[in-house]
Length: 332
Image (cartoon, rainbow, N blue to C red; front, top):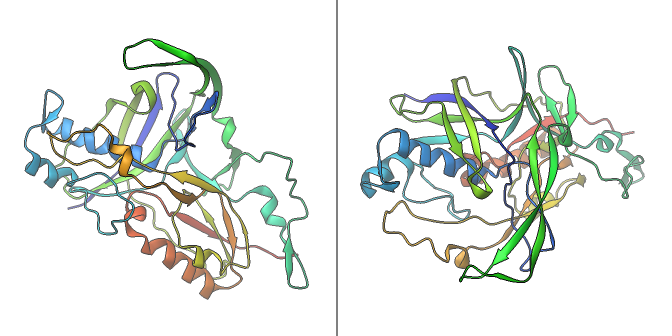
């Protein structure tokens, strides 16, 4: 019998989530403010092994047994039939705001300027969009429709990083700045997790996530997975997580306000003898459409076709990518 939890992650300290970069790192190195879905999946897989006594000296005891619990390998974007054992699905990442006993869950929503889409003849434009302005991602609580900007839940902290060679010596031109994040009090990350077997042990724990194994408090609560539905009157879609979709589908939209984000993840196997060195060499870099991107599609049939394209990428959908919400956009 399946069992669903809502999992929150609250950092004890500064945190730094990595992201795909160009071949040469800049002097100014900034992490992601949010964890990738693949990072959340990796954390869940490890905790299932650890909490269900499938590890010895931090290594898998029995590879075949471990595969039954967490699958044979980590996420690989080209495999649409990936199996993660007793892990049925992860949702996209929420921002959770905790005020006493009141817990509110927020997902990304469309940019503020997108609501004022206008049309002249066959052309669409955004009269209030300013290309010189940096628009922070907006997060919305679906119950009360209240919004806050992404940079409201964290503070940026600059630290000095040092590159060293294999002999442990500091290299020339090796100093650079790192931008870490400090989550403000009362906030946490969150996601829904559905497991195949209710007998799987998955409970509160301190977990490591991100650069330098930053420590987070993981709290696990039984919950009900919200249904993903939309109103037939809706004519627009907003991504609530990064998404992979064929360019031909995106080209069918009448208007989009979107951005791309590079993606690459380590691909490893559930095997105690697996060599992790050089895992990045055969991993292909692809482009995802960034969360908060919005698409105007005009009518219900086009919206349904767009949603089907998102859902058909089953490997991405399974671990929380390709999630969306629909809304009604009035064209001025």
